[in-house]
Image 1 (cartoon, rainbow over the protein chains, first blue to last red):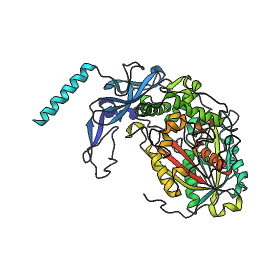
Image 2 (tube, helix red, strand yellow; image 1 turned 90 degrees about the vertical axis):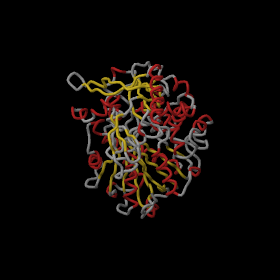
Image 3 (cartoon, rainbow over the protein chains, first blue to last red; image 1 turned 180 degrees about the vertical axis):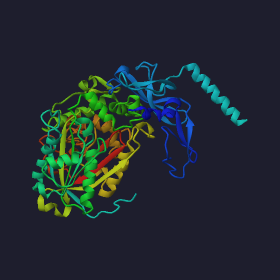
Image 4 (tube, rainbow over the protein chains, first blue to last red; image 1 turned 135 degrees about the horizontal axis):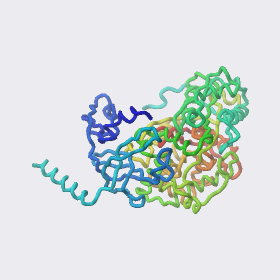
Length: 151
Length: 393
């Protein structure tokens, strides 16, 4: 694929920008032009996703498709983000035998694929296990946010 | 939506034909079309020039053999010019939507004799190229881009299903064992040998938890059928089989965007509409062709088609009820797993098998006794297109 194929997706792939419908409140990733629930009555705006979530389902790809041989075996997962939206990505910095459904993960920025000697090296998000200390930190932070909201 | 929106005529199948499925190094795309179409025309007792419209399903002639414009090629090679000929595409449901289009053409009253078929020539490219071609059926920007493969998508479904419903690895393997058993009696099947649970669960991992023997093969093959209006069917044959319903439903292309990944909503939607149009219920169905591209797909299909409740299909396999002779015989030709999965051909191949079963023409050992109604479920991609067809005597 050429440069524009990657360039036009830079917001989603580099900053995890999704869409939110201001009418029904539903969050979408990837971005959508129209809300499937509200259709033309909906109002779609950009929203930056939290980048933290839990593994909803996972697999370890042992037989990769062309271009991914370098990474095999690698983990592909559906991650459920805190924003209530699911996203497909690779899980990195994790042994294939250590991943499990419900595992807390956070987004990181990685190389996705390099296309031969002369092609584009494309980058984007992958997810990595969230350290326990960070889990606690984020939980505390969420509590503070809730109490502040109540004040 | 209310069905039928408008139906002018009922439709009958009067002729069927299938090529041998498998690694057909001896045949090219066009020759496979011939191998399926000629028996269909002979079986219908018509002449090629009686055919008024040709519709073939083909997923990716372009990526598999470098050939697009497949509709015209088939009409040309079958000697049918200038008959109109169209190729339709819906990934692995290409055959199913070809049947749907042919059904519309006859039911609407526009055409009287229509040939519908499906075809794929997959083994002219190395298997990693074929894998890449098949990833075109998923979301190329948000699934394939991150390294997902087709077995990978169904593995995500399997992992979640096993987590939610405690399905055992052995029960999952029973799907493949049963389909190989049926395939061993089908002379057109890709694999005509039996297998065992031990063999399936010790085959190499492809995408955890799915192993090689959970996956259907990459096959070459073609199937074809002749459709006519129901009220004219008896003119051609004593054993017409009627299309009671043929429905299509769509869903989000990307698996991860769906609310629930252990059910294919398009299967639920298409089958409910099909039962309503046919005025039948799941208990009326005597034989099923389910789209078992991977073992897990057949398990969730039986639930989504309404034969059992969600999470309970495993029991049917533990009790052997999906074999010929059981309560619910599924994939009596070996399915995609043993019968072969030439992606564009599958939707037609399934209905060809149902017609054989309803006529009582299946080989000894895999004939369901006295089958009156059959149902086929043909899935495109990870469930973004589903075609459900109910046929009856």
